Image (cartoon, one colour):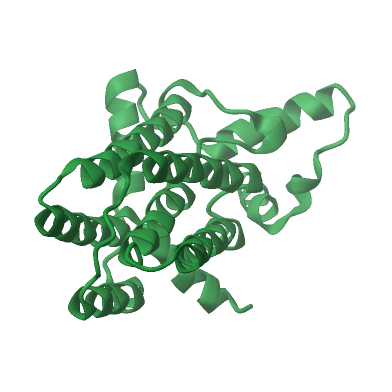
Length: 235
């Protein structure tokens, strides 16, 4: 698949795209059912996953808590959000259909979220372990939400379905750049008192020096495009 495809797909994992879709679906669910519990459970599970993801990033940028042997700097937020939101959203939209349709909708959501998680590796924004952890955390949030929320069997109006489809198809190409990474790095600096945030390249540079000093081989990811070009630029 082309680089343009991955760059477009990866934007579907942005909070600025997923959260409005989640909000619209939640508002419809609350107004139609007159019971806010289902929507609130979904938001609570997603919020817990988002908090854990943010804490891992703060820990790395502010306090250098990462794991260089796996090129780990924090959980992928795109992978987490897409997996926490999309399977539940699609399941809610077919809540009045039979179990097979509901399972198929969840399967489509999980498959799309898995592609978004992998896109983070393809665009060299995250290492594989970061993308997998984000996918796993988001999936745990989605499963927890679906088990507890008990979405009522409501028929989703065509206007909602078409509106969500248009939003998800059109906004990735036209939305402004996401600012969440910048916000988290600034917050980490403010909380830790550092002059500047710790970076992946700081971690890997120190790790490579340590391995070379001990005469040990570099992990395979050092020869990959994500790391190779950036490490050479630092030399």
